[in-house]
Length: 446
Image 1 (cartoon, rainbow, N blue to C red):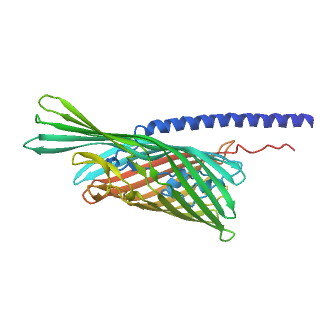
Image 2 (image 1 turned 180 degrees about the vertical axis):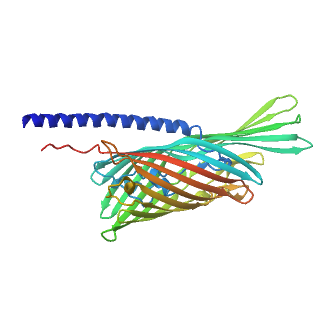
Image 3 (image 1 turned 90 degrees about the horizontal axis):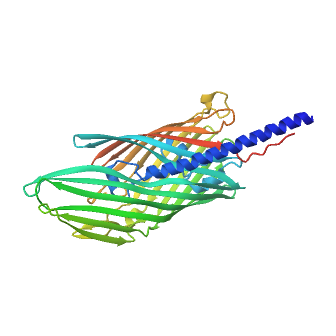
């Protein structure tokens, strides 16, 4: 018996050492992914000309599971998935679980204006998040997420007798990102609450560069701002059993709006076409930008652990905010450039048989649709509205030491269109992997 016990102890020690090395490898991979995400974000995550307005194209904050359901998440409370859309969900993480979720995307976009079409493609890392249970009824999450992206490069050409052929090149890059720490707590019965606190940072560069075939003066305009601020989001979830098979979950979120305390700078370079002499004028605005108050609500219904349907509604109060703008020789904060944004999304998740023996019975099949209004105006007219649809799969990763991790793959179509403006059709592939590790399991030898 002593010999057998010694073998068992050695086996447990070996497993503990392997698990320790796995933890180190996963943490190193997570930190490497975080660095990579920040580096790729610095180069911009879009090529849309619409990203020149406001603070750029707003990011999709959902993770692997939500992407296949077109970004829903306010009422999702799955202990095997990280859901940063509602920090109250962190309290549902299993006591034995350490979750890591990392994602990347590739996209192809077709731009159409009148009868002219152009194509563009790109790929980027998007997010890296983690979650675990800290104490009984309390979960913690942390990671890096996008907030907005700016990235465009296009030209316009006009002809006149004075300036000849004038070509203006519009370029922009940058965006905002958030490094967050969140806590979710089970308060009583069906109620949980949570908060995400984030460090919000980034920079935005924009420029308008003219070139003329005639020897005339040209005005080059360059815009720059750097942001270092914070972001606070609060959430609540109410989960109630309807019967022995069905569960209803309600979710609500609130985002705190505030000034970003940043300085926006604009420089005008007046170049004489004959002498090539350049005069520079620089404007600076303090407290130039802000993020809006936001409100969201969601509902989900789970039937038998096989079928989950969910829907979200989001409202962002952008119309109260001013943005820097140049007009009549003055660079100042202007109202009327932004408008309130509304977004609705719905999705479903179906797993044929969670207790089945066949692999395909454990795969999650997902669908989603959505609609969103713009948060900015273009020359006094509303920007493009968005229609979107998604489809996705969650494939279990089965091996000798882990059968709870998941590879999530989803495809999404987004159409952005408004009368008189460019129409964008984007086809996006999202790939995310959720490492679900049993770090906190205690081994027992009988």
